[in-house]
Length: 313
Image 1 (cartoon, one colour):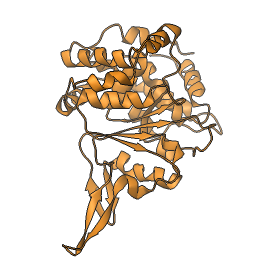
Image 2 (cartoon, rainbow, N blue to C red):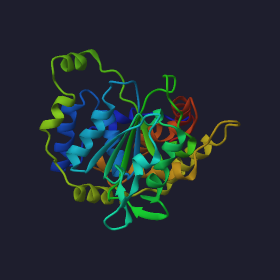
Image 3 (cartoon, rainbow, N blue to C red):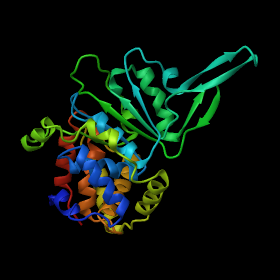
């Protein structure tokens, strides 16, 4: 059996000594109260150049988290409210005929921004959800036969309500696999909730925030995280976890893309902790967030069980 470590306690004892990074987390924790692990996972996802899916009940701070990251990182931000009548053209854009020029002009949709909040993504129909597939995978969109690049960097942070709620359309596996991580925020503990009731934290703090970093800083952090070293024994561990996920008959296993996502997230988590080598604890810290939504309806439980069944090198 594998040995499960309290990875969050170990991996967050220190934060990389980088003034802008420290300021980012300090200000973020004043808005999203009592959720340091979720903030760290969200930032890990961006450093790993991945898209983030946040699944939780309404009113838990999902939208606030997306807006917060865009504000602190100085990213161009657009929110798209997904509804059952939303069309792909409402996201990508549409060509409008100009009588003066006697030709069509393309009017870009809200997807042409650096950070997109796809709010309540599972309230839109599958046809509309599919408008994001090319953008999330290839960082471009094709409209009316012409391919247009998206801004750099480009992230999608999507929120979704639990599948049992009325008016939701489940995300297909191909869409889920394009999200590097899925996480939930959960209810605040009583102490934090009392602070919220007193007016601390929450969206009221967002208006006063100034960027503490720029897209160029984020690009530098991403490059540095990508250079974190990975030993052969650690690759064996990642490969064993992926292989074990495929060994259960009738259950979905992890794709090669999921293995690459796990490694990228572990590198980013290790870099945030101030290290230049990935430890097994880093893989464990991001494992459920990376693997859970790819492993079926009970994915998080399966992911935790898999973590216990694979030996740590």
